[in-house]
Image (cartoon, rainbow, N blue to C red; front, side, top):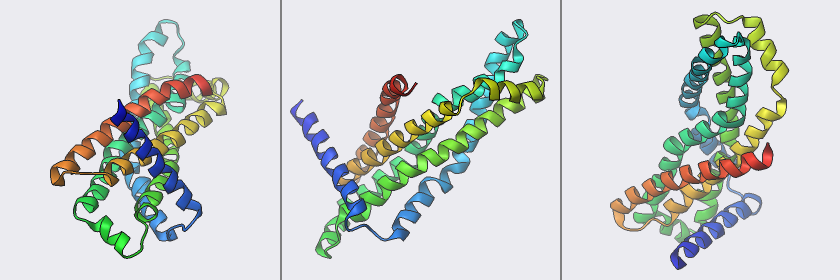
Length: 245
């Protein structure tokens, strides 16, 4: 139990330092741009494909039930609300954890065991400001941007399955989605995405920054980072849903 609180304390201090250096002794803009490009632009295809089929699955699963009551036109609203509130931010965050979070931990962890972080300190370069701050910023900003893409892709996936596969009226699909879906359904999902992105950046950088045990330690740190981030996302999703909606 004591070790658990020590780990939480170290992670909190590292994250607070990274936030502080966002306003004080901020790294060069190109570092932020490079990390944001890696987090958002290069992850877009994975998120779009995943969300497209997720929206299609929702339409596929709900059609048989709605068809019994001649309510197929409600599929659009169900897909939009499901993607906006839950599946958009959660699936996007899990994809970012798998692709970006693990890479962040491995990259920083490798720098730690090869003493590159010590070399930065010798050259009077603050490793937290140089390594952690840009990555924390990139995930916090990048995940909401990806979530927007996920929401759009999910709605389009549901539209393709509902209208092209099952022959649902296209006008009713879009109109009922507009009538029954509020802007806050998507805005609340973006609130979640900001928090999830912050978790991914903080956890990934923490495990990488304090990697120990050589190359095997990098593997353990990467695994722990992915598992911890995924669990925190799913746990916090419950509480955020209770508070936001």
